[in-house]
Structure formats: structure tokens, C-alpha cells
Image 1 (cartoon, one colour):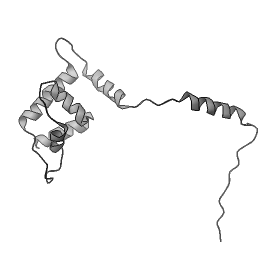
Image 2: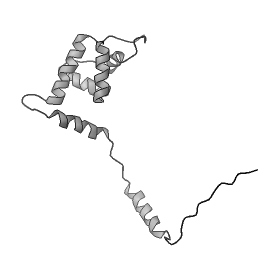
Image 3: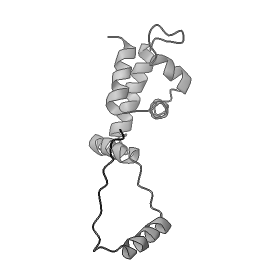
Amino acid sequence: MTNNDIFKKLRVALKFRDDEIVEILQLVDFKISKSELGAFFRNEEHPNYMECGDQVLRNFLNGLVIHLRGTKENPKNPGDVLSGKTKVAEKPAKKFNVREDFKSKQLKKVDKAITPVKYKNKKKS
């Protein structure tokens, strides 16, 4: 198993995007661009494929420790960090008060005594 495989599996398991990985690498003062990072995740036959060196993987793992555990001065609970990440990933539902008010007004106007009718499509011969 190569460093690229390990890096790919960690990325998928932790649901990281490229910009999050760049931020984690910046925690240990290791600068890398998104395009360089994308080269690690390409197929081996791709012309822009690049092997992930030991230094990149080592810095990512060290940055991941800081990201999940925090520092001695500011410790974090890894479970809280990971659960907080999933909450951020979910987008809050947009609420449009204008539409809700309009919809509620229309529902008040509907006669509840009338039952809905189901129509069947007839086959044309």
C-alpha cells in the first residue's frame, strides 16, 4: 500500500475536501496548493499523477492530530471535532416567510369537506 492509497483512504474516511486538507497542512506550517494535492488523488496512469512522499503524509498526520486533539494550551475532544464537522456539512433548510405565509393562507381557503378525486389514465386504442 502506497502513501497515496493511505492518503486517499484517510480523506474518504474523514470526509475531507481539498481545502480542509490544505488548512490541516497549514497547521504544521506546510504549504501546498489544491492542484498539487489533487495530483496525489489521481489515477496512477494519469499524466499529472504524483507520488505522495513521506514528508507530505507525515505532515498531514501531524496536522490531523492538532486538528482533532488541539494543542496543550487549547485541548479539544476529537469526538466533538468530528461531530461538529458533520453538523457544518449539513446545510440548514432555507425558510422563506413570504412563501410560508402565502401557503398557510391558501390552505385555510381549501374546503376540507371535499374529498380528493383520483383520475386514472385510460389506454387509447
